[in-house]
Length: 144
Image (cartoon, rainbow, N blue to C red):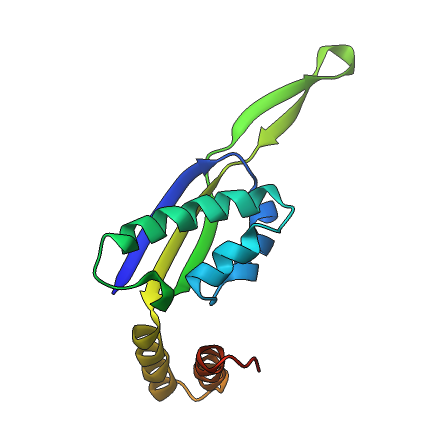
């Protein structure tokens, strides 16, 4: 099963949001939610709210939330609010207030393992193998 949620027009620049996204990518949904509580960034609260929204959708289905993994999370540019600051000689210095769009996809671990296995067949690199080993290691309680 796959759940997709979006959050648009967030008042934070994508550059500030990307480190938080990279922090939670590929983790179990409930583990990511608990780890985001202790992140000091403004973006961590935004990602946490989006994750809560996705988990609320999951709870309405028959699948347990513990089996979901953040399979894809991406941040894109939103529209820019154009403001200005007065400068000398009657000029105006531009200020661009950036916004972000955030997309999150949760999928069950078994589906993610199948997807990575298919990627492995199609490509010759070892990154797919490492992803499978990481998922299996997290299931068994060990980290690689």
